[in-house]
Length: 162
Image (cartoon, rainbow, N blue to C red; front, side, top):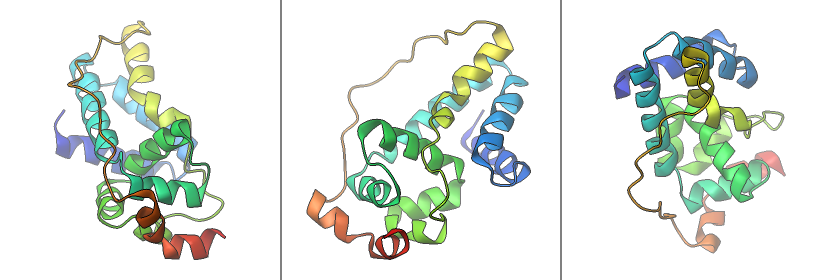
């Protein structure tokens, strides 16, 4: 699986789910499980790369405004963000406040299961619940502005959620 196929699968399953996060998760698992083990592992690698890229204080500030901002919640939030598709994801990386246009106050932006889509698809495909170990190259560094500045970057979100 390549980058373009990754985003196409995200977009197709999101559209087919009617933007219901939990239906989207199930469709992603179902469609991934139809692919080869190699494609599932590639999807997982691409997903992790985008999740790491979104490890940013400015996005974390947006997560805190939208919902819970703890470590686990921010991890789940980044999975949800990727699942919104490339356009929403890239805009949010450039300007976290752009999420004011993409999320409603009653949207669950922290469904944990987006993070486990690859694992569930791998298990469904192979019958094995353990995916091969990942080769990680060091720790991911939190990027973005300092906390005080990051919190100033989301005024439209603050207006919408408070």
